Length: 388
Image 1: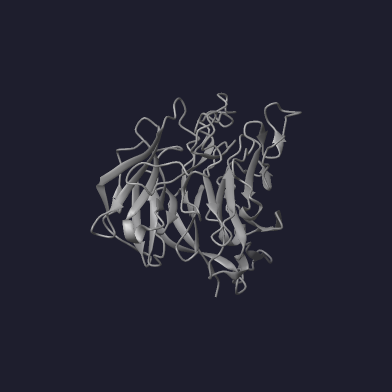
Image 2 (image 1 turned 90 degrees about the vertical axis):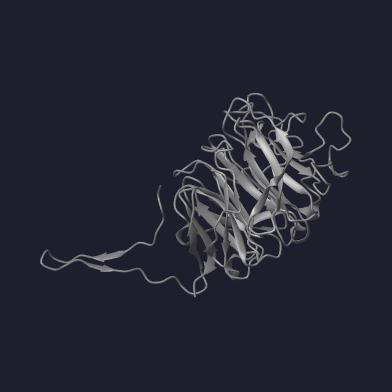
């Protein structure tokens, strides 16, 4: 993978004069930078429980959740499901979400593919040791088949500002969504779900879900027409929803649903009619009526292959990033951002020289303080900081 690094100035004189390599100047003060906080086995997500400013929970694809306390790795693992799930490629333990009342109820939720490759969302409770989960408390919240293909599993769990649990499911895999799952409202694949998990077990349907009383659709659905929403997030300040949907073979996209505009409820994000802002099925003259089109897209060029969505930066460490939504590309390893102003994407910026972790950019993460992290599937997890 190509890693964008500062260029070294090299001064070469005659053959009798040695080559002098002048090191690059340090970055100017107040610019974003990366701080390595640990190396893990295929990290795919990090987060913290609400109001927990001391710990960071790192999800490893093979099935472990590790805990860093003040950037020191604790043992044993918080949760270890290795050997009990399907992992590899796009399968595995894919994310974790802590209940908004975690300090009271100790509940957290994980998203993984089981040994058959089907999607599972399971609730656990922490044990008497705050750094170890109680595996005996496992309660399956949602089980959904994912037959035939191993890719496009989605994988994100996130509690919204409304306290409901949101889950992003991929379209079922393969290419082109031949079964039409994303546009089929009787199917959960290719959807963003919204469920209430505050009961004693399982989940209930929030009464204000867009299809809660619609017999033609699954009531769990919040939005549909998604290909593989590997990572989505809510702006912790505004509540706006950002969805980075992985493209087919030409375009990657970010859709934004501002809460102030009431958008996103029952939204159809267009797949497989559209790929980004472009017709996909059919390739020309597609019907775009009623579709929620992306705010930002980029094409597969210069090695780009798959978008990795991030967060709107609301931390205190890096004022230069305030209000910027950060995203990356898994293959090209660039890191870019934009700001949402008046419903439009503005102030587009490229931070690759300062913030790229190298190839295989698997995910971003956000802790309880609003600090943002970026990681590589190769193992490294970084915190975004400001140069002194």
